[in-house]
Amino acid sequence: MMALRDNGPLLEVEGLTQKYGHQIGCEDVHFSLYPGEVLGIVGESGSGKSTLLRCASGLMQPTAGTVRFDTRVDGLQDIYALSEAERRMLMRTDWGIIFQNARDGLRMNVSAGANVGERLMAVGERHYGSIRDVSSEWLEKVEMDLGRMDDLPRTFSGGMQQRLQIARNLVTKPRLVFMDEPTSGLDVSVQARLLDLVRGLVRQLGIACIIVTHDLGVVRLLSDRLMVMRRGRVVEQGLTDQVLDDPQHAYTQLLVSSILPV
Amino acid sequence: MSMTQEAQPWQAPEHDKPVEQVEGYNFAYLDEQTKRMIRRAILKGVAIPGYQVPFGSREMPLPYGWGTGGMQVTAAVIGENDTLKVIDQGADDTTNAVNIRRFFAKTAGVATTEKTSDASLIQTRHRIPEKPLTDDQILIYQVPIPEPLRWVEPRETETRKMHALEEYGVMHVSLYESIARFGRITTAYNYPVQVNGRYIMAPSPIPKFDNPKMHQMAALQLFGAGREKRIYAVPPYTDVKSLDFEDHPFTIQSWEENCALCGADDSYLDEVITDDAGGKMYVCSDSDYCAERREAGHVGDQGEPQTPAQKGAAE
Ligand SMILES: [Zn+2]
Image 1 (cartoon, each protein chain N blue to C red):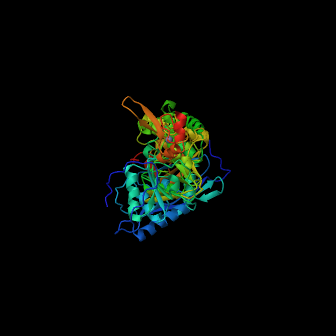
Image 2: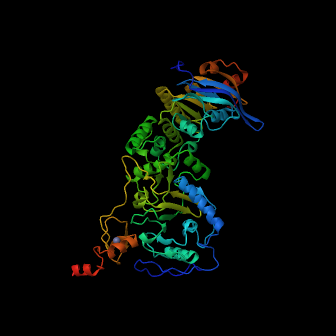
Image 3: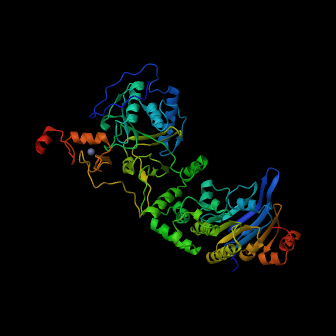
């Protein structure tokens, strides 16, 4: 399903630049993301893709440029012009962030159910039974065993921890989810099942997604559009199939032909 | 002066005899500049109910954990006309309570008392008196760990931000965990509260039984944490709400028994082992409250009648 574009962009990134001293993290990045659209960002390590994700997701203020999000109440807003309280509220309600390392995205000292329920409690849900019901629903949606709802995340496998992160983020029905190498470090078969799950959920729920990865297989499966980054700059972007099947930039051609270790 | 003197045997509550102030110490031990600094922190705390104000905690002639935070607050607010009561676990006669009371009797020359109603200042560890306090009294809590968010977030910078942005979802996460594991909220002491609809506050390790007394209390409530260098406050007549869920509302401890000595059915009871065979009885933890009730003629199952009228009636 292609994203509907009648309503304008959900996220608009313009001139995004992040410098670390004289070093460039990413430079002059522009893109728009529409509701329900999945954007893949690929590149080698050091290409600036992770810096871009951090800046676009509200985790790190860029040196220059703007990140505007279509807020439910006030329309397109520069997220770094919001107060910190507003930005953090946005990040835990209308956004989700799935980290590569589950430890960065989960509370390891509380149960799976509490991990999923936390966002509900953060926005004021005060009925234990309802929190429990909604958490159960989400654990089922990410195909986790409900019998393990009260277990601590550290007792779960890597793949299950990622599923738990997904449930924890999706419980407030965010419109935008950022994923940073969500399947890296997992066994190939576990990866495949997780990718299937993610694909099903984002399509079913119409969530817009930005996925940063070094794995072209991941973006081939999940993303509508693709951005290829090198040395902090976007060298090519377009529809995923187009970019992968008919790469125009010499660097993309190298990537696709797997000559470069990505 | 020595803080290691033996506790005096407990006697029926009455005014302690005023002790002559010891020479060579500043009034209430701390120098005036330090007291002013602490008072400024207190005033800020009163202005922002439940907000933890950092202060330059001083050394007191007692180790941390013995109430040095509470003592510094007491030293900063006490005046020569004050009457001081000190409670430790509800009792006035523990070594800690006796030492603190004697400390201020010697360094400030103030009168001390074991009677709640006679005190203008009450420094406490672990209890709030059963008898409702009045608006001419100040209750000063000794606090070991002032930060209610510490269990989930070890970084001070982050907990300060969570307070500033009112990001308190994690407090309910801890209550959720308790219900998920045990079927109910098991937190019995230091049960977290929200003050004036804003700051989440640790009430210090009082039993949750005492939490409702904090709500709309007529007396000013001050909290001092010496080791952690924090002061906070609840002004008189302020809302203090214990956190809970709609379907798991906050409840206080209750007992099937009444106090064995005074028969009270509305006070916090301690279990007391009476013999080697496992015999036990329940008595008021607030020793002044219990004594006052017995003086007034109330008798529990195992209590001795105290007034001639009662004695006569029992025979
Ligand atoms: Zn009693």
